Image (cartoon, rainbow, N blue to C red; front, side, top):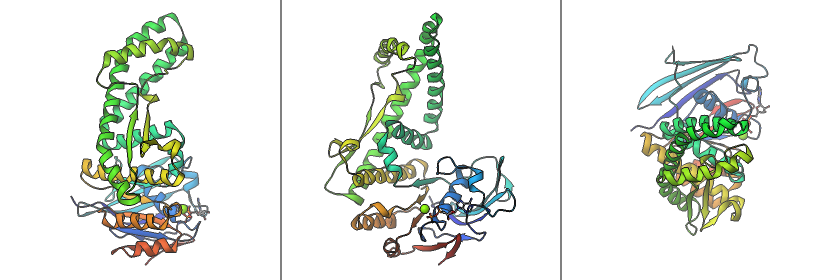
Amino acid sequence: MLPLEIVSLRVKNFRNLLEMPIEFGPKINCILGENGNGKTNILEAIHVLSTKKSFRKKTGFPQFLSVDGEEPEIIFSSLVRERGENVSYSAKLTPNSFELFQNGKPFKKRPKIPLVFINPFDASNFYSKASERRRWFDFHLGQLDKEYSASLRRYHTLLKFRNALLEDRQRYAREQLKAIDSEFVKVSQALTLSRECFLQEITPYYERIFKDIFSKNHNVSLHLETNISSGNSEKFKSLLVENSVKDFGARFTTYGPHKDDYLLLFDGLNSVEFCSLGQQKMSYLSLLFAYIELFRYKIGSFPIVLMDDVSGELDKSRWENLVQYLGRGKFQTLITTANEAFKDELEKIEGTKKIVVKSGLVKNV
Ligand SMILES: Nc1ncnc2c1ncn2[C@@H]1O[C@H](COP(=O)(O)OP(=O)(O)O)[C@@H](O)[C@H]1O
Ligand SMILES: [Mg+2]
């Protein structure tokens, strides 16, 4: 299948970006500029157009709107090449609305611009808490498997209801708990099975990419840490019942897939406890690229890869391998950097396009 790519973007009143077309090449795009000039804002604009949200936490319309904006309205216009055809997506954002247009006509769905956003700083969050790892896996698994997202929503509804009963502590609560627990067991097992399958599918990519880009001398692997046996519902149910005594004391559900964790092993050791920050970052980036390749396998085309400030934390030989990997990749990459040497490395790859940003002014080189 032909790859999907963003051909051009123009924004009005979005952050510090000036209203002029930004043109992208089909492979690597190196967005170069000193700090605070608007590189990340370009990636953010594409992210908002595609998902209605920023990747920056706690930001919305008030932060997006240019401080110089004369009216409270942000416009995005883009041209995307989908399966060899040009499609325009544009959007109008006001404080209370997001109107999207495909080829000039109102479009009720989400634009079909699948993205993966990569920020190496996110690795520290990912390694800091099990809940962050669950969030990462839930999100990415859900992107590839809509049934998983539906089961997850169902699970959270049940969990909320279960916790409300535990909080309530009325006599009838125990009876009601029994009534919902068979459904709780069923949904929990479906989730666990999907998680196990996802790990099985992503692991070969993860192991290979880690060796390809970062280190041939180390082995990485992934494991789901769960008490739930996806195949044995009776055992799970009896553990759930056993645990409900504890749950009534704690007033919430102490046992279930919302307590699972994902172990990233590095030469057999838990990377959360044993790895350097650099090693954690390498594992995290490998996981994201593994997801990108799995995405291509499952969905049939690659997502567009947005990479923010990736070079800072890696040593030179790792960047070189990373750049070689991107060069071999069949996906479009938009990669920001303030680092001239990293830019030089990217420019060694045939077809790399340089985009220079200065005070919101974009020069297509
Ligand atoms: N709503 C806004 N209006 C105008 N300028 C903004 C707005 N929000 C952020 N900026 C400016 O954008 C710049 C930061 O852009 P960013 O893309 O994060 O920089 P970098 O090139 O380092 O990635 C800063 O100069 C900031 O003042
Ligand atoms: Mg930036």
